[in-house]
Image 1 (cartoon, rainbow, N blue to C red):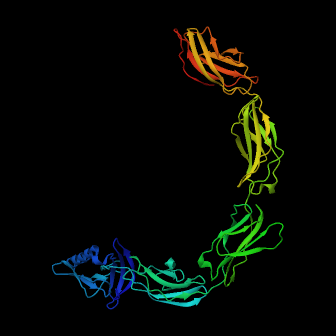
Image 2: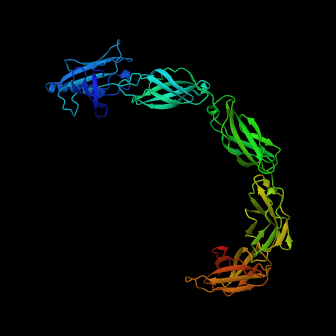
Image 3: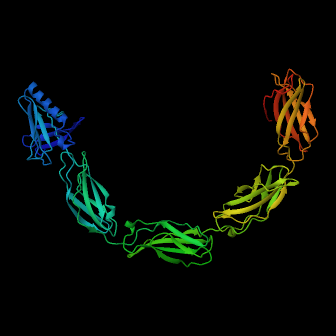
Length: 537
């Protein structure tokens, strides 16, 4: 390639790039095609050989085409030379004495200045490693690194990768420090203080990476005071009566000097004046004990090494570890709204007795039975709230309850308030538990039931409604009042033996009728029933 001067790029095909070039000695203008050779042991690529044969064919077809096949004087692992014999066959010969990567097959004819009249089949390889690394212009935190580029092997270097090895921490290995565009062979490198460096450079072209250069000489940067203090200074206090101060540990490369450590500062926000307490540690966290539960403190952490201290640190307000609350809410009051709903409220808790961040209150409701029929308490229902009041629904009518309130934080609950007992008022009953139909004749129907599981008051009877099932569904409901609260059956007479009926049965208290259970059925000539379904209404 040294005998040609590249004038510009003409175009690019599927297998290579075509350049406009001028022969330095003869001044002849040609087009050169560069083709990458991926595997040296494979020899010249097939597409290059095909172009050689194509040029030979052109030589036979038109006058003035001169075919020349040249081997460039480039050294590498192996040498292959191709020649065209008179029989117009292509012969590939291995030459052990030389190692060649670039082959040129140039056919010459008139050049019009806009397109290639010659073909160049060039193989490319990875670049050779850079050489002769030199460190110059050393400063406190930078140096200039320069190198001599290695052979590009017909593929221009796109970029260089500068790597470093920390001699004080070789287990980290070689790490990338900077990338430099292929046109440059020197660069300024930013460095950390108090480190021992060696550098190496790798070249990269379209084919791949070169090997690594030989390492540079060792360069040491001087120690300096720390640049920064640790980030994310905070309290992770969990246990009562302790203050746990922690932070994000600084990377060793930012120690900037020997004997690195942290200076920890703390003082109470209230009551101890401006005096700071200090101590040193090499790693987080730092624990202060016997300082009271959930007390407010100012804290700060500063980086320090043998050269001096880092910047003035920022202070943060944190709290020592929480403990369970000391006291129960006071002045608990209840307002019954109806048989299933109440409103409860209490006085705000004194903050210092919470001994932590107040997360809320818990209201405990324990049902101990129906009014006048106490039994073993049921499991309490717990309702949480963030306010000093709460509207609670879904209570059982005609029931006895105990209510208590407790405050809680992240460590747990405090003691409950004194239990407050109350009774809910009477309500309407729940549905009877079951309903069966029994027909003794073609005009009679006997209904048998089980009383409601939740009468919700004093049961004083039942309401039985029934209607014929017709297509219009406009059949009127007929009512039978059953005043005996202990009744468990009732017989209807005078029914139409040709009709189906729908039956509704409800319990009654002084408040009113409760929820109904429904069943459909018809009488039969020989007794029995023909039920359809049953469900509460």
